[in-house]
Amino acid sequence: SNYYMLNPADRYAAAKPQMLLQSYEVSDHHQPISFGLTAGYTLNDCWSVSTGLVYTKLVSDFTQVLPDYSLMRRQSLHYIGVPVNIQWKMWGNKKLSTYISGGGQMDINVKAQTVKEGINYDMQKDHLQFSIGSALGLQYNVTPLFGAYIEPGVKYYPDNGSETQNFFKYKPVSFNLQMGVRLNVK
Image 1: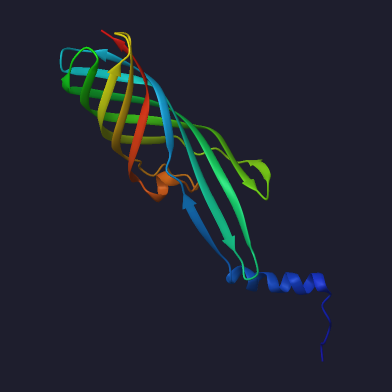
Image 2: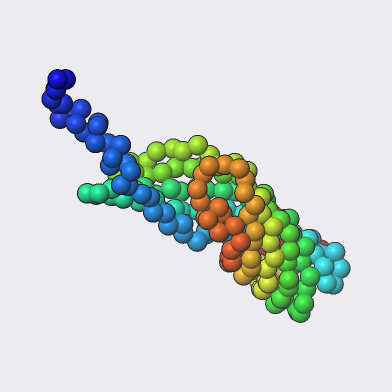
């Protein structure tokens, strides 16, 4: 007969595939946080175009659940986006205005990292991410040149073909809230 005894390391290696079959991963994708600086160019009394820079941070928690314990890692993705939007002013005066906005945005992943057991690791950056969306906006002009805005809206993020799991893949259509400062150009 072919009987032999495995040393403890070999027994663990032999048991490892069984442990992997009993494990699973749970993901929790947090709502993105965005803020930006934009410039709006007035075309006429009702229409304007805006563009600028928008910073977005995506955070996701991944928990690998094993039979006897679990491992957690936190993924942080930082994007710089360039939006192009058209606004139609519904109502307004010199200080306050409301508008409807629609357009698109291109987001570039500038930093990607994960924290596992308290240690930071750099990750491969996510692919370029595009989105289209619309929003209702409220802008308060602090001066004729500068205004603060807040825009609750909805965005659609088409699949960018990467394997990076994040909020954009988990919820390709989502509600958002953007706020920032806008330079008013006449």
